[in-house]
Length: 340
Image (cartoon, rainbow, N blue to C red; front, top):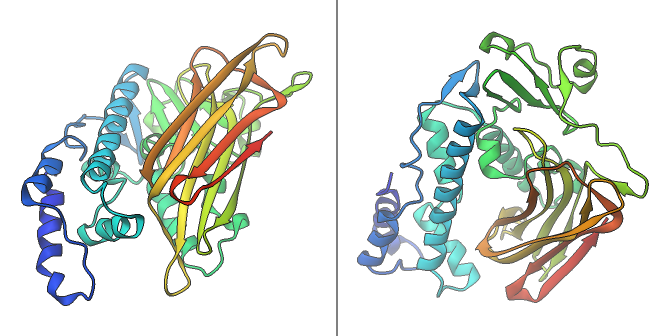
């Protein structure tokens, strides 16, 4: 797969004479350099078992190895493209991506295809394509409402039913975003494990990962999102959430994410790469008395960007009004903050 970008670029160049305006790729040597780097997922080759449409990892360590490899390849794949065409303005940068068939998720797509796997990531992406094919973006029908991962790699490792098996623990995210686990499970248990919270709550052997109850003036286990228009034909989607980590013991993520969109000539919408900055910050606690500051910030030229502040050791709360998300489209001097 390392030659994909080279091949796509050659195809794009061959058709250039038929287009009124084409963005010329850089030299052959620079194109070869991006194709020769890591980032296409070809090094993340693992013999992970798939049973009843669900990945089965031998243990948490195996899950972590696969996750970390894919995340590294995913970031490298996108960083290479960003570096190669850094001199282009936003419109030309996006036109180049379209022209050579560049896909931010290609690393994950390749991994899924190699296992004949239908992921939650793929499900969300198809729903987003339908949502964008409208003249108005409606937050009430946004597929992001059911994106309980907000992490492309994690959602690529979960089935389209939101399930993953680690050792003998079968995990599922229900239709409200709550996480459940069925211990001592086998492959045969996968089809019968519901994602209906009412059914799960009345299944004795299944338990929630956490309760998500308020504690004095503190709270946890929530998510909010919305859209903010800017520059006449663009919108930034924002998301801020404070939840437990998905699999593998106690942990907390205070999570900010943003996605950039632009209106097309036909009035419909598309994903749009630009320089984004996103930050999650605040103060968290285990007892609503002793607080520790957290902060995570990311800035890249992407269509979507996340900044998860992560604590892998404890399930934390935050004081009401002290969890913040900051979002910025740098090239357009547009920014805002959300607080909960």
